[in-house]
Length: 86
Image 1 (cartoon, rainbow, N blue to C red):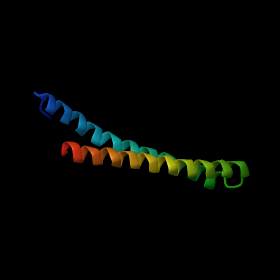
Image 2 (cartoon, rainbow, N blue to C red):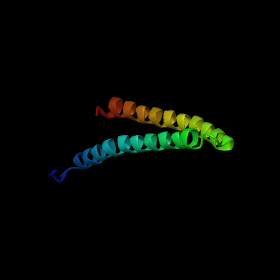
Image 3 (cartoon, rainbow, N blue to C red):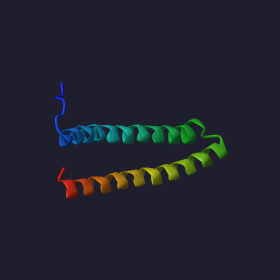
Image 4 (cartoon, rainbow, N blue to C red):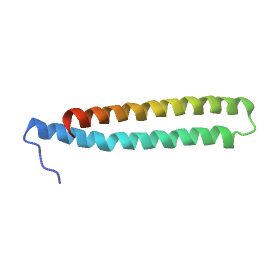
């Protein structure tokens, strides 16, 4: 059982701890969803030409979004470690 924070810094540290758990969880869920969508459009609907083209467009946009999300998270972590020493 965690202790109840008694200072503002303790409260902020609790929130940061929760966020540090939630963000990797969201990234992993997003990655699984992207893999499923690509699998669905390229393997399950392999004979359907428009579905394969839509899957290709989805895969390209998904990779771009995923790279942007990871980059943004990296920048936030860099600022967090350089400014706050966390």
